[in-house]
Image 1 (tube, rainbow, N blue to C red):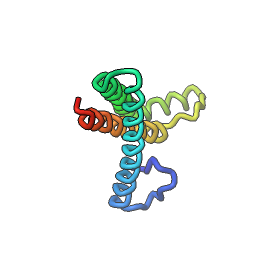
Image 2: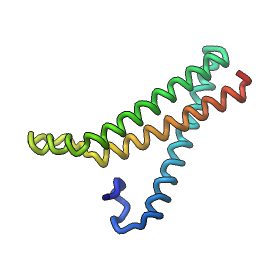
Image 3: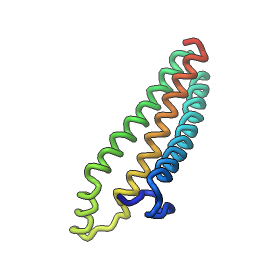
Image 4: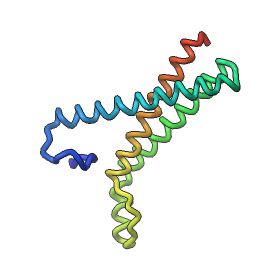
Length: 126
């Protein structure tokens, strides 16, 4: 199966690919955690601690759910969509690989966001 990362050589070993995926997932979870903490703290200016962390968690769960749903759609229908683009002679620049990469980012960012919002809730004693 070809790599979705264009900078990765096709001949990389399985262990190297796993290492790159774990590194990328960790980076995007950290970005999501920062977003989740920032949203939780930002909402504290408007709502109570419970309302702020509950809302931040819900927003993170929305991002996570969208990412996972869109990723699974890209995996399941990606080749069909690419085939229809070829058949209709329409080039939108959309590819299955790029969609999988994009929704990988969205999913892991949402996961970090959810964890940070839950941690903020615990730290605030809600």
